[in-house]
Image: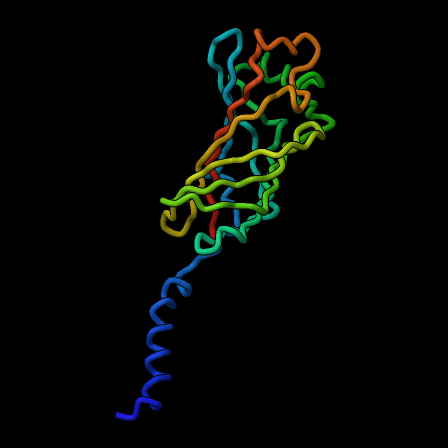
Length: 190
C-alpha cells in the first residue's frame, strides 16, 4: 500500500471525527421574552418577601455552548413593571427613593465574560446598572438545550445600598435588608 497516498485520507478521517460537534453547535441569539423572567427576593423586618420584574429584552445576545468564552449579552429589565405582590409596594418602588423608574426605567446587565465551570454550569461576570450606578457582579447560571431553545437559569445577590436603592428613611437595613437576591430564567432561540 502506498502510505504517501493514504496519509491525507487518514488525516481527513481523523479531523472529521471532531466535525459533528462543530456542525451541531448552535448559537443562541434571540430572547424568547414570553418564556423569560426575572425575580427578586429580600427581607423586610426579617420577613422573606419576593416579587417579579417587568419585561426582559436582550438587544445583544450571543451564546454558543461550544464557545462560552465568546458570549456577549445585554439584558434590559423593565423596572416600571415591577410586582412586589401588592399595589402599595409597587407604587413605593417606583419612587425616587427606590428605583426612580421615571428617570431610570431599565436595569441593565452587560457581560462579555462567561466562564465554563463544568457540568452545564457557567458564570457571567458583567456590569449591572441600576439608577445610573454601575457595579461589577458575577452571575452563576446553568444552561441546557431544550428542543429548539436554550435555557439559562441562575441568580446572584447585590447590595441595594451600592445602587442607592432604598434611600431616606429606607436606608435602615433593619427595615429592609441590604441584600437583594435576583433569580432569572432566560430562554433563547437560535
